[in-house]
Length: 176
Image (tube, rainbow, N blue to C red; front, side, top):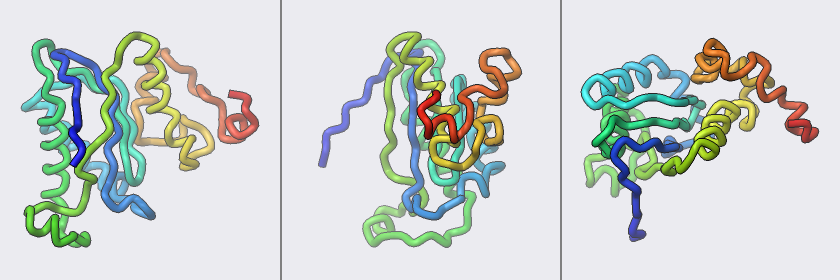
């Protein structure tokens, strides 16, 4: 088994990718967006963190989050988000014998990708990546058309113009 090394920096900022176990053809995360939002809200009430950027796609999500000073336990937050979301769903998913034996649901991949944000440029690149992801995956023709993203808050704050990142055709042509 791989020996995962995680960077635990109190008050740090991280980029995460969290995937459903069965990604192909699933729309679970957007279909159950209210449940996911409520689960994240409850976890934040008990274990605060700042959402710097977040996008929910049908079968995975990306976020940039910052923990409070002195706190480095992002693993706890993800465990609570994933388990809280899973427990609220009916048990209809296929589970392997290994997951059954461990008493696990078959909703989420066990691990997630995390990257410690190193500086302002790294932060900007990851926030941009989060916000352009629905366009990258072909879910929309313009970033502004994806409803499950903090992109809209960035537009309201004047950080991005509403037409930021152009459109799908511009990316395919290489204009962006």
